[in-house]
Image (cartoon, rainbow, N blue to C red; front, side):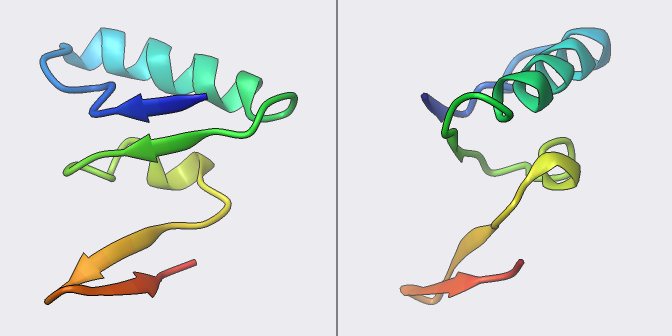
Amino acid sequence: LMLDEPTAGLDWSMRKQLVNLLAKLKNHWSLLVVTHDESDLLPIADKCWTLNKGNLECRI
């Protein structure tokens, strides 16, 4: 499942519900999530890749 900015425009409650759903889905599906705000998704991430000055870096 590929998601681009899935938490953009959501209030805190909806963001939390979405993160909880993604945490359940990741047990059965592969997820690729692109976001500018990783704070909500980082706790459920197995890997976190970032772009730093044009270089792709693995943070986890």
